[in-house]
Structures are given as structure tokens and as C-alpha cells.
Image 1 (cartoon, one colour):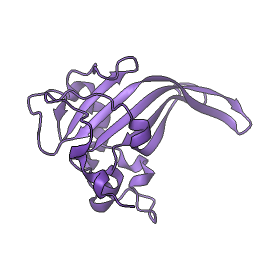
Image 2: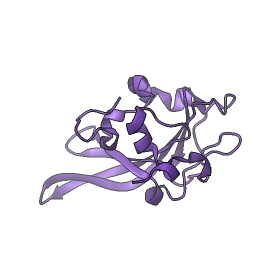
Image 3: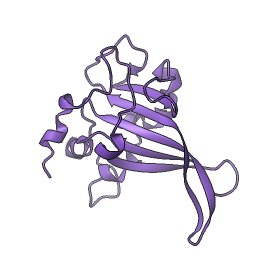
Image 4: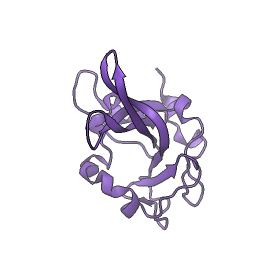
Length: 176
């Protein structure tokens, strides 16, 4: 597969405007690569309360597998769904029910938006409610976003171990 064109992040429609305001990319489900999904366990009983489905902009996976880093300009989109749990012939199953919103991150190794409180530590960070994919409710990444990512600080703030496409096909662990 030729990844040269897909790695040219500058030719893609911008996910951030000149001021650093991020938005949910319009066609991420059909043009981005699936990184993986997470199930957040229910507080009580069986099943999950949330499902997270994560996508990466084209070329991100190949670049990460090459050098163990997310390339500058890479975009990650995490859909967050309320889950529904019920019985099926396979047993108790949880599935995505209602979209709660999106978490969007953009890799920024150049410090593009140093004065913007949603950019720092190598990323642009924003949460979007399901009814507003172009207006974030985040005001400061340090208080609104980063606290959930502290355990993943050593892997560039991303829980890379949960994403099978980032792994070497012969390995059970992420490449870095």
C-alpha cells in the first residue's frame, strides 16, 4: 500500500482554524483509519456504560508503526457512546446506543497555538457534545482533558496499548 499521499497531512482539510479551534472532521468515519475501541464497564451489574470508538487520520498508523511516534498534524477522533446492554444468543452484550460526543486531538510538535489554552504538551485537545461538532465545550486542556490521560503520559498522552493497528503484527504490544 502506498502511504506517501496519505502521509501528506498538509493537503487535508484543516481540522483546526488559524486560531487553533478544532472541530470534528466531517468524513472521519469513511476517510480515517480505525484505531480501536474501548468499553467502559458499568458502575453496577454486567455490561458497559460507554463505548469509545477511535479513528486516526490517514497515514497515522503507518507513520506510528515506522518510528513509534504520532506524526505532526495527526488527528485522533474518539466517538463516545452511551451503551445499552442486553441478552443475545452469545450472552450478555453491550453495544453503542446514543452518541454522547467526540474527543478530538491533533498532534502538534511545532507549538502552533502556544497562546490557546486547548493546545499544549504536544497536542490540541477538545471535547464536542453530540449536538455541536464544530463548537467545543472545553476551555483549558489541562483541566478539561489531560487528567484522563495522565497514566498515558509516557506514551505521548495516548493509551497506545489499546490500539491493535499500532502493534507489530508479530507482537502483542504496541511498537513503543
